[in-house]
Amino acid sequence: MGDNDNWELNRVISIRANDIWAAWLDELADRTDRTPANFIRDLVFCLKFTGVGNYLIDTLNKRDLSFLDFTRNAREG
Image 1 (cartoon, rainbow, N blue to C red):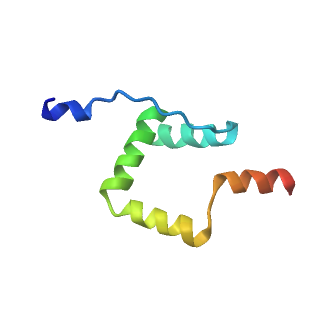
Image 2: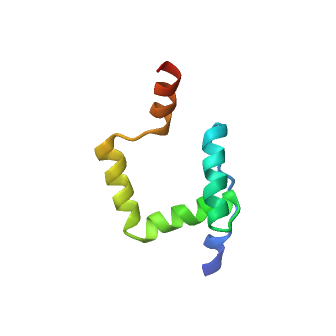
Image 3: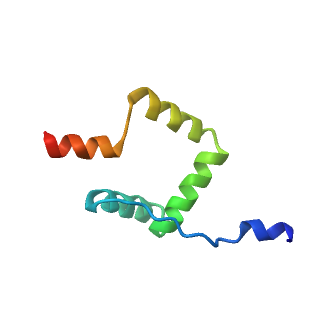
């Protein structure tokens, strides 16, 4: 295996979402002139290789943020 073999984009990852989430993704991707798939890939790359990922993890944990919880509360509330 050559050094570049590990960089081949050969996996598909599915994300369960709803119309609201998909619209948010489309808006963010449009603002960065990327496709939604490229935006998500670049977002994960950015989170991993900058300090932003640690900040995001801390914020998610400290504020107990969850989109799934948000949607449950919206349906119940």
